[in-house]
Length: 69
Image (cartoon, rainbow, N blue to C red; front, side, top):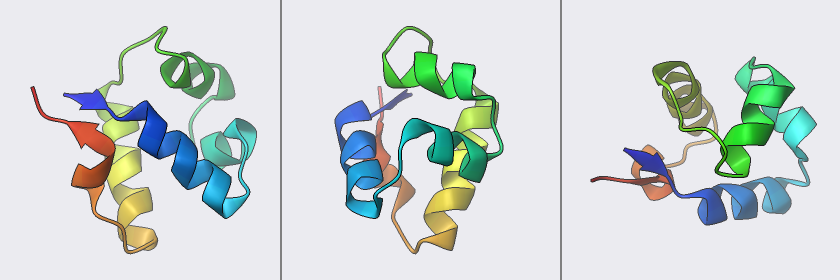
């Protein structure tokens, strides 16, 4: 499973969030989020779990942010 980084970046832009704010909202280390957002690191279960929670909180469909392989 991969994250659709383009949609995720658009989501952040729409909310006026930068990656630091996003990392805080996901309760993840900024360096981890930074590497994921640049495709330098794959997403792990922790990132996916936090993304699901963030989607639930914002009434978004988690599947809009992922590619199923």
